[in-house]
Length: 237
Image 1: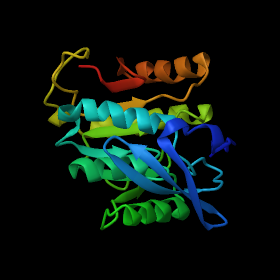
Image 2 (image 1 turned 120 degrees about the horizontal axis):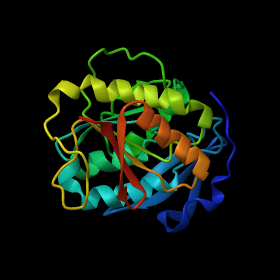
Image 3 (image 1 turned 45 degrees about the vertical axis):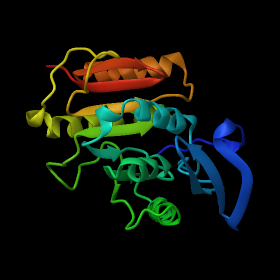
Image 4 (image 1 turned 90 degrees about the horizontal axis):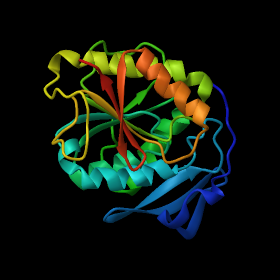
Protein backbone atom coordinates (compact mmCIF):
# COMPACT_ATOMS: atom_id res chain seq x y z
CA UNK A 1 0.00 0.00 0.00
CA UNK A 2 1.33 3.47 -0.90
CA UNK A 3 1.88 6.07 1.78
CA UNK A 4 0.72 9.66 1.42
CA UNK A 5 1.62 12.34 3.94
CA UNK A 6 -0.75 15.14 4.86
CA UNK A 7 -1.12 17.59 7.70
CA UNK A 8 -4.54 17.46 9.37
CA UNK A 9 -4.34 20.95 10.84
CA UNK A 10 -6.16 22.78 8.04
CA UNK A 11 -8.81 20.19 7.17
CA UNK A 12 -11.43 20.53 9.87
CA UNK A 13 -12.86 24.02 9.40
CA UNK A 14 -15.89 24.59 11.62
CA UNK A 15 -16.59 20.90 12.18
CA UNK A 16 -14.08 20.35 14.98
CA UNK A 17 -13.63 21.97 18.35
CA UNK A 18 -10.51 23.86 19.30
CA UNK A 19 -10.51 21.85 22.52
CA UNK A 20 -8.15 18.91 22.22
CA UNK A 21 -7.01 16.45 24.87
CA UNK A 22 -3.97 14.27 24.30
CA UNK A 23 -4.74 10.78 25.54
CA UNK A 24 -1.40 9.37 24.40
CA UNK A 25 1.60 10.61 22.47
CA UNK A 26 0.21 8.81 19.43
CA UNK A 27 -3.38 10.07 19.72
CA UNK A 28 -5.43 13.24 19.89
CA UNK A 29 -9.11 13.43 20.84
CA UNK A 30 -11.23 16.05 19.09
CA UNK A 31 -14.88 17.00 19.40
CA UNK A 32 -16.53 17.09 15.97
CA UNK A 33 -19.88 18.59 15.04
CA UNK A 34 -22.14 16.31 13.04
CA UNK A 35 -25.79 17.06 12.19
CA UNK A 36 -27.70 17.01 15.46
CA UNK A 37 -24.87 15.70 17.62
CA UNK A 38 -21.28 16.01 18.76
CA UNK A 39 -18.87 13.10 18.54
CA UNK A 40 -15.60 12.79 20.40
CA UNK A 41 -13.18 11.07 18.05
CA UNK A 42 -9.74 9.79 18.89
CA UNK A 43 -7.41 10.27 15.94
CA UNK A 44 -3.87 9.12 15.38
CA UNK A 45 -1.33 11.93 15.50
CA UNK A 46 0.09 10.19 12.44
CA UNK A 47 -0.78 7.09 10.46
CA UNK A 48 1.05 6.02 7.33
CA UNK A 49 -2.22 5.11 5.58
CA UNK A 50 -4.02 8.33 6.53
CA UNK A 51 -6.45 6.50 8.80
CA UNK A 52 -5.57 9.12 11.40
CA UNK A 53 -8.09 11.86 10.75
CA UNK A 54 -11.50 12.86 9.45
CA UNK A 55 -11.55 14.10 5.89
CA UNK A 56 -13.92 16.91 4.81
CA UNK A 57 -16.03 14.47 2.82
CA UNK A 58 -17.28 12.78 5.99
CA UNK A 59 -19.02 15.95 7.17
CA UNK A 60 -20.46 16.77 3.74
CA UNK A 61 -21.66 13.18 3.42
CA UNK A 62 -23.34 13.26 6.84
CA UNK A 63 -25.29 16.38 5.86
CA UNK A 64 -26.34 14.84 2.55
CA UNK A 65 -27.51 11.59 4.11
CA UNK A 66 -29.63 13.42 6.67
CA UNK A 67 -31.34 15.16 3.76
CA UNK A 68 -31.86 11.81 1.99
CA UNK A 69 -32.83 9.69 4.98
CA UNK A 70 -35.32 7.55 3.06
CA UNK A 71 -32.55 6.50 0.67
CA UNK A 72 -30.36 5.24 3.51
CA UNK A 73 -32.60 3.73 6.18
CA UNK A 74 -33.23 0.01 5.94
CA UNK A 75 -30.05 -0.67 4.00
CA UNK A 76 -27.29 -3.06 5.04
CA UNK A 77 -24.22 -0.84 4.77
CA UNK A 78 -20.48 -1.34 4.61
CA UNK A 79 -18.16 1.65 4.71
CA UNK A 80 -14.86 1.42 2.84
CA UNK A 81 -11.89 3.30 4.25
CA UNK A 82 -13.58 3.92 7.59
CA UNK A 83 -10.46 5.39 9.21
CA UNK A 84 -11.58 6.58 12.64
CA UNK A 85 -15.09 5.16 12.19
CA UNK A 86 -16.72 8.55 12.82
CA UNK A 87 -19.20 8.51 9.93
CA UNK A 88 -20.37 4.98 10.71
CA UNK A 89 -20.72 5.85 14.40
CA UNK A 90 -22.78 8.90 13.46
CA UNK A 91 -25.16 6.81 11.33
CA UNK A 92 -25.49 4.15 14.00
CA UNK A 93 -26.32 6.69 16.71
CA UNK A 94 -28.69 8.65 14.49
CA UNK A 95 -30.75 5.81 13.00
CA UNK A 96 -29.57 2.56 14.62
CA UNK A 97 -28.66 1.49 11.13
CA UNK A 98 -27.00 -1.82 10.19
CA UNK A 99 -23.45 -0.76 9.30
CA UNK A 100 -20.06 -2.44 9.14
CA UNK A 101 -16.77 -0.56 9.12
CA UNK A 102 -13.82 -1.67 7.03
CA UNK A 103 -10.28 -0.58 6.33
CA UNK A 104 -6.83 -1.87 5.54
CA UNK A 105 -5.67 -4.91 7.54
CA UNK A 106 -4.21 -2.98 10.47
CA UNK A 107 -5.04 -3.86 14.07
CA UNK A 108 -4.45 -0.28 15.25
CA UNK A 109 -7.20 0.96 12.93
CA UNK A 110 -9.68 -1.66 14.15
CA UNK A 111 -8.82 -1.00 17.81
CA UNK A 112 -9.20 2.75 17.36
CA UNK A 113 -12.64 2.38 15.74
CA UNK A 114 -13.71 0.18 18.66
CA UNK A 115 -12.41 2.82 21.10
CA UNK A 116 -14.35 5.56 19.30
CA UNK A 117 -17.49 3.44 19.39
CA UNK A 118 -17.13 2.99 23.14
CA UNK A 119 -16.55 6.66 24.04
CA UNK A 120 -19.56 7.66 21.92
CA UNK A 121 -21.91 5.13 23.49
CA UNK A 122 -22.01 2.61 20.65
CA UNK A 123 -21.76 -0.74 22.38
CA UNK A 124 -20.95 -3.33 21.38
CA UNK A 125 -18.53 -1.90 18.84
CA UNK A 126 -19.62 -1.89 15.22
CA UNK A 127 -18.67 -5.01 13.24
CA UNK A 128 -15.43 -4.44 11.39
CA UNK A 129 -13.92 -6.06 8.31
CA UNK A 130 -10.23 -5.96 7.55
CA UNK A 131 -9.94 -5.71 3.79
CA UNK A 132 -7.25 -4.70 1.35
CA UNK A 133 -8.79 -3.45 -1.89
CA UNK A 134 -8.54 -6.00 -4.65
CA UNK A 135 -8.16 -8.98 -2.31
CA UNK A 136 -10.72 -11.77 -2.06
CA UNK A 137 -13.47 -11.54 0.55
CA UNK A 138 -13.90 -14.08 3.31
CA UNK A 139 -17.62 -14.17 2.51
CA UNK A 140 -18.62 -15.21 -0.99
CA UNK A 141 -22.07 -13.64 -0.57
CA UNK A 142 -21.74 -10.53 1.59
CA UNK A 143 -25.03 -9.10 2.84
CA UNK A 144 -24.37 -5.42 2.11
CA UNK A 145 -26.61 -3.66 -0.41
CA UNK A 146 -25.14 -0.19 0.10
CA UNK A 147 -21.44 0.67 0.08
CA UNK A 148 -20.34 4.10 1.27
CA UNK A 149 -17.05 5.98 1.43
CA UNK A 150 -15.75 9.51 1.77
CA UNK A 151 -12.57 10.99 0.30
CA UNK A 152 -10.93 7.64 -0.40
CA UNK A 153 -9.32 8.49 -3.76
CA UNK A 154 -5.90 9.34 -2.31
CA UNK A 155 -3.90 6.55 -3.89
CA UNK A 156 -4.00 6.55 -7.68
CA UNK A 157 -2.13 3.25 -7.85
CA UNK A 158 -4.97 1.62 -5.89
CA UNK A 159 -7.82 2.73 -8.16
CA UNK A 160 -8.01 -0.53 -10.07
CA UNK A 161 -7.97 -2.53 -6.84
CA UNK A 162 -10.75 -0.34 -5.44
CA UNK A 163 -12.81 -0.86 -8.60
CA UNK A 164 -12.24 -4.62 -8.29
CA UNK A 165 -13.57 -4.54 -4.71
CA UNK A 166 -16.56 -2.41 -5.72
CA UNK A 167 -17.38 -4.68 -8.64
CA UNK A 168 -17.40 -7.74 -6.39
CA UNK A 169 -19.61 -6.13 -3.76
CA UNK A 170 -22.05 -4.77 -6.31
CA UNK A 171 -22.26 -8.04 -8.22
CA UNK A 172 -22.71 -10.07 -5.04
CA UNK A 173 -26.14 -8.52 -4.45
CA UNK A 174 -27.13 -8.01 -8.08
CA UNK A 175 -29.84 -10.74 -8.18
CA UNK A 176 -31.67 -8.97 -5.34
CA UNK A 177 -31.81 -5.64 -7.08
CA UNK A 178 -35.23 -4.10 -6.44
CA UNK A 179 -34.94 -0.59 -7.84
CA UNK A 180 -34.23 -0.24 -11.55
CA UNK A 181 -33.23 3.09 -12.98
CA UNK A 182 -30.82 4.25 -15.63
CA UNK A 183 -30.23 7.63 -14.03
CA UNK A 184 -30.72 9.43 -10.75
CA UNK A 185 -31.81 12.92 -9.84
CA UNK A 186 -33.27 14.74 -6.88
CA UNK A 187 -36.81 13.67 -7.83
CA UNK A 188 -36.12 9.94 -7.72
CA UNK A 189 -37.44 8.20 -4.64
CA UNK A 190 -34.62 5.75 -4.12
CA UNK A 191 -31.22 4.41 -5.06
CA UNK A 192 -30.27 1.37 -7.10
CA UNK A 193 -29.85 -1.70 -4.96
CA UNK A 194 -27.01 -2.42 -4.57
CA UNK A 195 -25.15 0.87 -4.99
CA UNK A 196 -21.96 2.66 -3.99
CA UNK A 197 -22.29 6.18 -2.60
CA UNK A 198 -19.14 8.27 -2.35
CA UNK A 199 -18.46 11.76 -1.06
CA UNK A 200 -15.57 13.48 -2.81
CA UNK A 201 -15.16 16.79 -0.98
CA UNK A 202 -11.38 16.64 -0.92
CA UNK A 203 -10.05 17.93 -4.22
CA UNK A 204 -8.01 15.60 -6.38
CA UNK A 205 -6.54 16.29 -9.78
CA UNK A 206 -8.90 16.26 -12.75
CA UNK A 207 -6.75 13.60 -14.40
CA UNK A 208 -6.96 11.40 -11.32
CA UNK A 209 -10.72 11.90 -11.11
CA UNK A 210 -11.11 11.00 -14.78
CA UNK A 211 -8.90 7.94 -14.29
CA UNK A 212 -11.07 6.57 -11.49
CA UNK A 213 -14.46 7.28 -13.03
CA UNK A 214 -13.22 6.11 -16.43
CA UNK A 215 -12.05 2.87 -14.83
CA UNK A 216 -15.48 2.39 -13.28
CA UNK A 217 -17.16 2.82 -16.66
CA UNK A 218 -14.70 0.40 -18.28
CA UNK A 219 -15.73 -2.15 -15.63
CA UNK A 220 -19.37 -1.78 -16.68
CA UNK A 221 -20.37 0.57 -13.88
CA UNK A 222 -22.66 3.58 -14.21
CA UNK A 223 -21.46 6.79 -12.55
CA UNK A 224 -24.01 9.43 -11.56
CA UNK A 225 -23.18 12.77 -9.93
CA UNK A 226 -25.91 13.58 -7.39
CA UNK A 227 -24.61 17.03 -6.52
CA UNK A 228 -22.90 18.27 -3.34
CA UNK A 229 -19.79 16.21 -4.15
CA UNK A 230 -21.82 12.98 -3.92
CA UNK A 231 -21.54 10.24 -6.54
CA UNK A 232 -23.57 7.07 -7.02
CA UNK A 233 -21.98 4.10 -8.78
CA UNK A 234 -23.87 0.96 -9.76
CA UNK A 235 -24.01 -1.70 -12.44
CA UNK A 236 -25.85 -0.82 -15.62
CA UNK A 237 -28.88 -2.89 -16.52
